[in-house]
Length: 353
Image 1 (cartoon, helix red, strand yellow):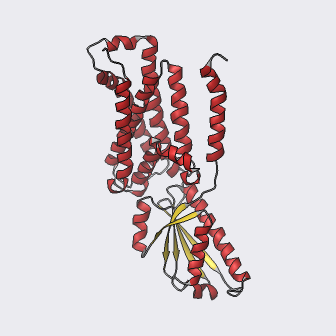
Image 2 (cartoon, helix red, strand yellow):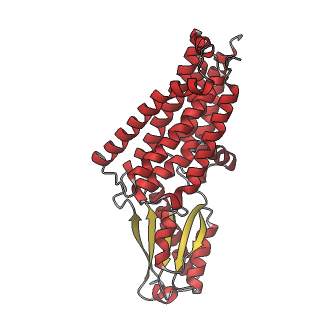
Image 3 (cartoon, one colour):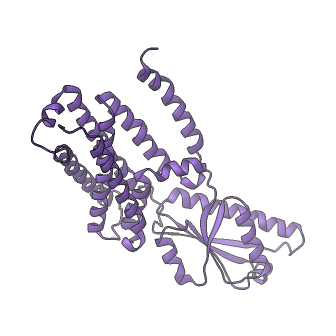
């Protein structure tokens, strides 16, 4: 009872895990952003779109005017699914049947498949209601045609390889850095460094440089394995991917340094790194579970996690082939995170004065 740290581990971690898993571990998707290209614009198509938007599963983010607008919308990552309705939708569906095209962003195959299943169920319900209300005859039929963009075979590796890279870089960069510096403080050797002619920034750079190099090697290994073993594409610039990985590692290293300035021993550093970084990276970053289905407070917390911004960067470069014109916001946010954490670390780092 006198060991507060043990009490926190015994009772705090299970409570945190239950709450996080209870809110996050769900296959249900809510308010997913979709785009609509309605060539018909008649009462039937409008009624179908109203049913989609009122279901609670979809939010119509964009009303497209032509098929040329589909590719930019997907590349920017703003939409997860596109619904294309043909001309004369009402007349066709009452006669020989009308076909609706569904185009999913299969860079996240699980989410794309789930969204398409949702649309299929809603269309079937809409069809049955139209027949039951006498709006049309029993020959009324709506057929859906599905196409998966960027990942037509729906390979799970397209989602998990970027996520694994995110986890590995966070593990090596942040956790190992915090534990290493905490070990120096625990053994008392940090005092020797502090009375040396070295400045605090030089000490920090000396301690983190090996982990920066090791993390870069790990990133290269993960990318090569993803391409050679799992068939991951490299549609974008490999140089841009390397630069973004370097920025993400710098953010993780800054986090590790900040943690090490707040703790006195390795166990505390490991505990805070695991609970404060690893679990949120897995659960709240959108790596496994879609962030749209999480409660708003958890979405806000997830926005403060570097992996939330890095994971779409890896997918965007490798799978979609996008550049900084699309990823500038993610890059700017990670750069701001690195600057903030490094500044806080230097302020907390006690120099020889």
